[in-house]
Amino acid sequence: MSQSPVVELTRELVERASVTPDDAGCQQLIARRLIPLGFEARWFHCGEVSNVLLTRGRGSPSLWFLGHTDVVPPGADEQWTVPPFEPAERDGCLYGRGVADMKGAVAAMIVALEAFARQTPDTASGQVGLLLTSDEEGDAVDGIVRVAEVLSEQGGAPDHCLVGEPSSIERLGDSVRIGRRGSIHGRLRVDGVQGHSAFPHLVDNPAHRLAPFLTELVETRWDDGNDDFPATSCQVAWIRAGQGARNVTPADATVQFNLRHCPESTSRELHDRIEAMICRHGIERYEFTWEVMGEPFHSAPGALRGAVVGACRDVLGVEPDLNTGGGTSDGRYIAPLGSEVLELGLLNATIHKVDENTPTGDLDRLADAYTEILRRVFA
Image (cartoon, rainbow, N blue to C red; front, side, top):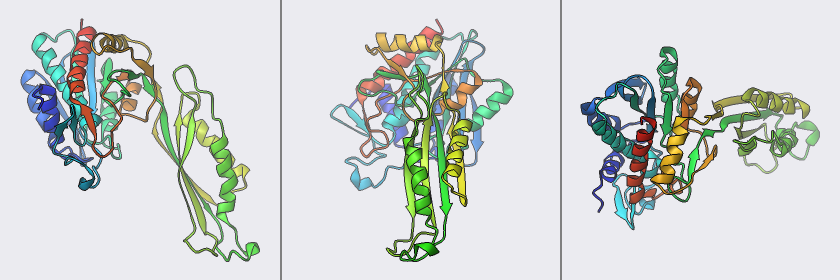
């Protein structure tokens, strides 16, 4: 069994069943470790959500790590080969809900900050920090978005922010996010007139009205992307119509879809294009809802990018692919404040799955990489 500080701290965090939005005491545990090293804690409690900012020092350069202590529900315990909140090592990997997404990275951040604080007693020339939420895996309405509102009002954003989301694909450090696409949920309900399927002149079938719109929606090429972002894409999430009777037409038909968009198509432009589609296909009675979960962001090359790429090369022995892939992250709330935002974390192959796991060696190596990033930024 591994006795490394990072693995042991990861175990302690995983043992706390912090299913979103419950923090289950993780942030208090972390604060108790960092406050004796000169970190100041600032708490942002919003409803059931716990957010905390732990900082040490003042001024520039400033670098904050960003993470979350909440996890997705584990599902049925009997499907796991180990209890999801009783972390266990097997074949060189640590198993448990949240080890990869993202308590392992949080543990690596803490160990790196502890090492940096002990080696750097004078922080007058800059600030290090750790910002955590328990509302990343859930609704994400009382988490970092709320903290970002306060930071925007008070002008307290860091120069650099490193997010610990599991960005790696096949090897630790092989993928680094330099931005993220935006995410939008769209929902269209078309109303019709229910009736007997044998009498089409007496019905108005909303499924028939929806079908041509849906064809255009999925076949549209929204844009061509750019050097840093792939083209905007649209995926249908679910379609619902009818009550299950074979000879009754539905009273309404609904489609839910998701757009992942690059900066070449704004959320406003996409909304207007889809609304124009609705009108073009003669849909008159409908309800159209539009929920922007996050706008795209991209960080230009800066000191953090240089430090992250250098640490991946020298500590992890890999040349990272700099990309904007994956879903969304809480970095979308910090980037608009003017911070350089990058993401570097563990392997993402098992996140949100049964038997989530991560190589124990990667936990130590990630802490070493984070320590090297701090050294380079504050050199």
